[in-house]
Amino acid sequence: MFAWTLVAIAVFAALGLQAPPVPVIEPDSASYLDNSAFRRLGYPAFLDVLQSLDATLRQIMWAQIALYAAATAALGRVLWDQAAPWLAVVMMASLALNPFLIEYQFAIMSESIWLSAALVWLAFLSVLYLRSPSFRSILWFGLITGLLIVIRPASLPFLPLAIAAVVVIPAALRMRVRLGFGLAAGLLATALVGAERLAHQHRHDGVENSQTAAVLFARALLLPAVVLPEGAAYPALERRVAGDLRPVLQAIEATADYRVRLYLLAQYGILGHFSYRPPELDRAATRTGESREDVMAAFALRRIGEQPLAFLAHGAEQFVGLWTILPINTPSGATAYAEFLQVNSPLPFATELPALTVAELPYRWFFPYLQVALWLGGLILLGHLLWAAAALAMRRSLGADMWLALTLNLTVQASFAGIAIVNIAVERFTVVHMPLIALALLLIARTVVVGPWRSVSRSLCDS
Image (tube, rainbow, N blue to C red; front, side, top):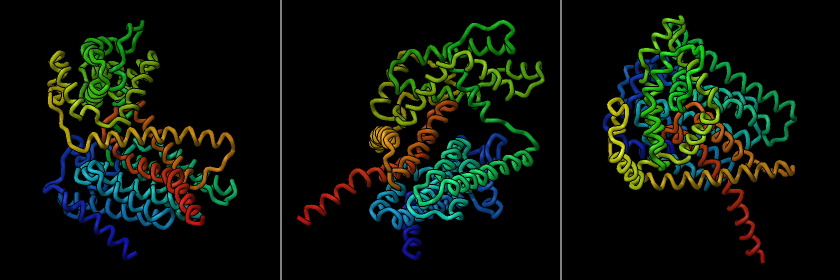
C-alpha cells in the first residue's frame, strides 16, 4: 500500500509541475459554477462541496489533480496484481503523459472528475474479469457506473454494457448468479441516476432545461430543408430556419475536404446547441402553450423523421470524427481551412462563431502523433471486434484478457455511436474515452503479442 501511495504522490507531483498558475476557464465552465439547470448535478455538486469549504478555483484544480493521481495509482495497482507489471506501468504512463488527459485536470470542466471516476470504473471492471468477483465489488462497480452518468449523461451507454459485462464474467459462476449480479449492479446505478434526477428537480424547482432537446435541435438544423408539409405545427419557425440555415448548408457542401467539413459541422452544431434561438421559436411556444424545449424537440423529431437517411449519414460523419480527433488542427488541416476561407469568407453566423474566422487554427506538436495513434488503435479495435465475433460464433473461448478487451471495445464503440447520433464530434468526447481504448489495446497486445513471444522464447531456451 505504501508503495502505491508513493506512486500516487509521484503522479501528483508530475502533473503539478505542469499546472498553470490559475485553472483554465472554458466557455462551458460558467454553467458548472452557476449550477445551470441543464447540467447534471455531479460536477456542480463537487464544486459546491469544495466551495463550501472556502476552496478557491486554484485549490479546486489541485483537488482534481489529486483525484486523478489517486485513481491512476489505484488502476495501476489492480493491473499490476491481476494482469502484468509491464501492462500496469505502460497504462499509468499513458495516463500521466497524455497531454490531453492532463490538461482537463487543469480546467473547470466535468471531464476532470469524469476521467478519475472512469479510471476507478476500469479498476473494478478489471477486478471482475481478472480475479474472482465478489458481491461487494459488483455493487461498487454499479455505483461507479451510475456516478459516471451523473457526471456526464453521455455515459448512458455504459449502463447496459456494464450489466452485460457482469453477466458474461469469465468466472466459475452459475448463470443465475451472474444474472443476479448484473441486476444488482444495474439497479444500483439506476437508483443513483434516479436520485440525481430527483435532487435536480428539487434544486431547480422543477425546471429541466433538457440538453436532449438542444442537441436534437442542433442536429436537425443541419439537415437539408424540405418542402413545408400541409398543416405544419410551426410554419413560421420552419420558414425562418430554412432561410437562416440555407447559407450554412451551402457553405458545408462547398468543401470536399473531410477535415474542413467536420470542423464546420462541429462549429455550426455548437451554434444550434447553445445560441441559435430565432424569435419564432418563442412565439411558437407562446401560441401552442408548450415549453420552448418541447417545441425544439418536436421540430427536430419531425425533421429527423422526414430525413432518416440524411440524419444517419450525419451521424456516421460524426462517428468518424470521434476517431479522427482534431483533424483540422494540423499544418495540412489548417492550410486546407485557410484556402477554404479565402474562397468562402465571410461564412454565415461568423459574428456568433468567431472561431470560423480564424485562418490559422491552433496547433500543438503532439496532435499528429495522437491522431495516428488513435487511427491505428481504431483499426486494431475494429479487427478485434471481427475476430471476437468469429470466435464466439465458433464457440471458442476468448480468455479473461480478451473478454475484458471486448467489453471495453464495445463500451467505446457504443458510446461513440450514441454521441454521434445526437451530438457533435468535439475532442473532449474522444479524450475521455482514451483510457478505455488504451487498456483494451494493451490487453489485446498481451494476448496476441506478449503471450506467444514468451512461449517461443521458452521453447528456444528449452531447446
